[in-house]
Image (tube, rainbow, N blue to C red; front, side, top):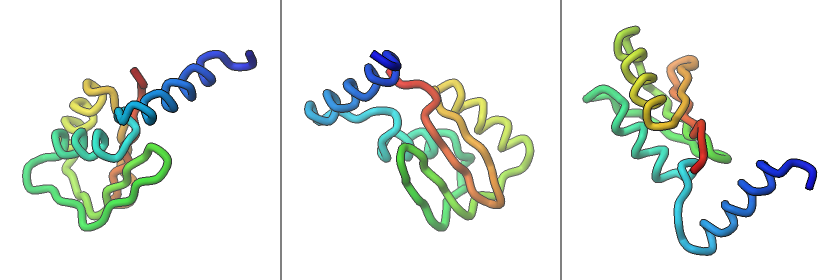
Length: 95
């Protein structure tokens, strides 16, 4: 065994996929987390999903909205960063 945690996570992902289960890094949980954390009325004009990361484009937040959103996402186990009008969202932990 070279890296036990990485190998275990990889095997869990294979088992989840075989069972039809989703992980926090899949599109649906990321969309649900974003929808629950974004302020009302904030709708992206485009989205991209690649390798466990969701990017929502066209999001503009005040400092207060940004802070509240990041707090809600961290509580749910997700990390987020704003970059040039885009919100990038990624699972920080895996069950």
